[in-house]
Length: 268
Image 1 (cartoon, rainbow, N blue to C red):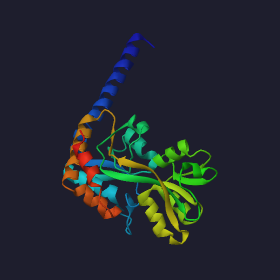
Image 2 (image 1 turned 90 degrees about the vertical axis):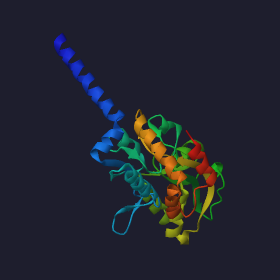
Image 3 (image 1 turned 60 degrees about the horizontal axis):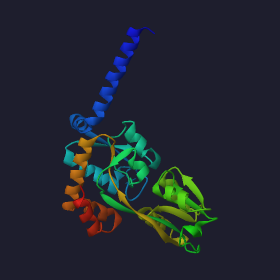
Image 4 (image 1 turned 180 degrees about the vertical axis):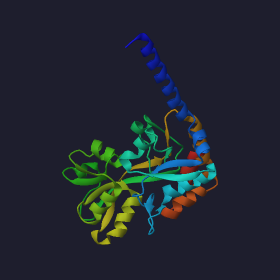
């Protein structure tokens, strides 16, 4: 290839790279120009994300996305996802934000930015009453169902020595496994575990122990400070005016702890 051809190729790559990074840097402006925001939401994680009898999206994460789009003055487009595809959807430009029970972890924080938390999530191990399980050590030799690529998957894989972690591709699969008796132990959120208890009272499911209390943030692409700043201001405002708490209580049956809200509102 001639020097002139190499120069042209380098110039083209530089131009494309500049356009790519500019597009990401101006995501907020692009959203306003398109009058639409694309939000990645898992609709198989009741009560955070689900569909109603008419197959329309609903749930606490969906309502948060609706409120955010309304306050931004744009239409909402839901980008359906499962746990493992939430971040790839954002990174590949299929979505502008993630509002999908995205708990903060050091590994995820390396590839996406998190907003100030908009809601809490209790992560636990639960199972049938007949099993004597009170800690990670008690899981040795036992099988535990989890949704692949979730914090429960990570916690159990790293800390439940000797346990057989059985991974499903989405929360719907985990719920079905527990409700139908395919799985006697599960690592999941308190909200999803409540759904399992309601669907299968005959299984006598009970909470065994808490894995962690997660802060759920809105996921934003790295190096997108303008959009992240807007989202953070929006989260603070809607904690202060009580709207995020109203959504949480509607679907989860309890208020966000007052001290947690005060901590988040005071966050930089």
